[in-house]
Length: 262
Length: 366
Image (tube, rainbow over all chains, first blue to last red; front, side, top):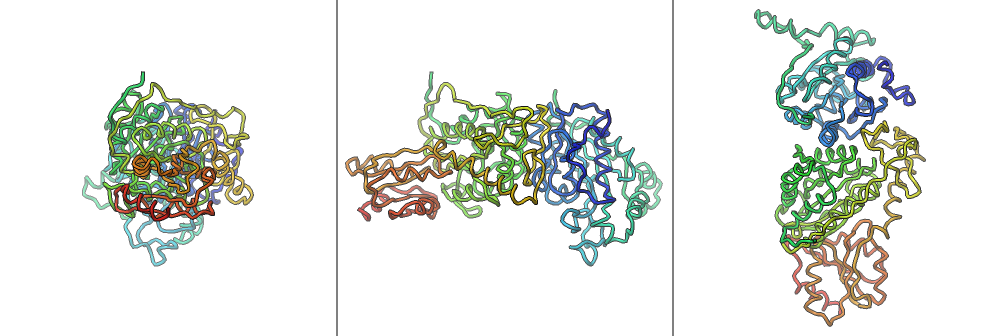
């Protein structure tokens, strides 16, 4: 068995642009699902709207491609009505943190037994490159033509503050780490949130001085700082460099969870 | 043994749902529907079902659709403002052919309006509120007994036609208390399962595909995008989109005779009232007070699809009078089917028409 068995072969090729990071995240997610040895018929993928949310359409299990921002609310219904099902939500930064922000924090608060994988490309890719709640200050998009003037959300901080049991952040560069993080999320009862920063050469990269795909992946790598190192710097009173993504396992705890079979 | 109770309409609605096998309720508090959620919160866990209070009505509607795909009979209950929030996901339920029941205890609108007063202002919203073309089923109870019976029927219709079904009640019926006779059992028509090996969105001869329940190994992909019979997105194929939308509409509209539920009283009358929901009660009072006046009455329980063929039963009709707690939403629907004059008798403000008001209208056209 291989993670490739989870792909809906008759739906390929996919719609992702050349150089897109989303496929990497789908691969890592399915590799983790394969390792946790769930049965395909017991697994459901749910998504909203956006590039990321097309992923469940390429997976052989039952899948629900829903309305913009509402994937977690639909998934809540699936999981609560049948806790025997394993439910994974695949979402993006716009879907999860803008239009779906309310559902996100309330699912964290309920600590419902879902695993949410967010492909954060810091842009609205499918609609052609508008600013999102995670677009960094100063970055260019079609709706921030003079540079984004709003501070971005830290999605992991949001999940931790709202009560999620498991929270990790990695990038599309860190494939092994990402796979392990998703696996840990799948195995943790309660709400698990894995943020994967991904390159979007079409909508983000070409407007923000990433001439080739590898430049943006290299940027993600170079601006990733392990949580352990970040904590050490803070402890030693050293300055933390600006514009760093804190990566690694950011939270693991055991708050009372909803939707877990006794 | 049947038993008799003295119940509030909203209680009867919740009990009707439970009797029909509803096992999932996702909702959000809103006057004047909240008693339904409260009743479900008490009763559902004891029946092995799930009650969940969602963060808003958008999420409530989403949750019942998710639950329905696991095979559960699922419902929500709300009123005007919440109903408005549900619209996008109602369209999703129509497009994905997800059986579900949405109860709307209508109150005065627009906007926050009159939370504690009755109205029928959402009748067109329930028919056309979500974007795009589709058809739905809407039932209108006029008594506590019907709150029970029509809620139970709503689940059977939802499962049979794979469509969102609306119980379009109002504050008057939701909050009135009266005698109700509880039957021993309620008929439950199960969902038609998809035959394995059949394409998941390939309709049978009745226009309705079998249901591929999640967790049963169908591996179905469900999307709100225009999809082919495999369920795969196919959003730029004009012919396929037309065929899909026409099937979603036709499966309901072609079953209008089977879905229809109405009473025809005094079909030889020249003056005919047409009513649904709470105004039925005032018409009944007028007829009770004037038994020799030969007042015709078409009393409708299924407003959508509209049973226009019932209008023709009143062969001598000279004039139709339509009392509604809105500015004539269904009167306009009736008008477009009839050559005989149709007069809307609107009542805004949250109170029922008085018998004197209807009598005055009757005199005016006699």
